[in-house]
Image (cartoon, rainbow, N blue to C red):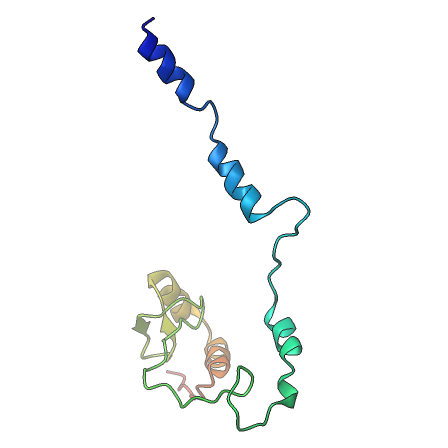
Length: 125
């Protein structure tokens, strides 16, 4: 083989040492990795009870109601509902749920509406 080719093979690393160096610099031996704290732990550590109540912080923040309309959710599946059944007043996500809604007895429909806090009395027609 040519001498240039032999020199080139010697220069190229067999394995990538840069990854080991980065990990060693980031977490040297004997040093523990940083643990995540839960929100409850952060709140307890900050002692928010000692702050005055009118000073805003993460515990007592108050916001006005949203100006955007709420998302419509399918009453059966919980997916975002693009459709509304005028007969039962239930929201649904797809045709399979629509077939299920139409096959439900009236008392089951009333229970779904009660879960959504939509107190509607359906006529039995």
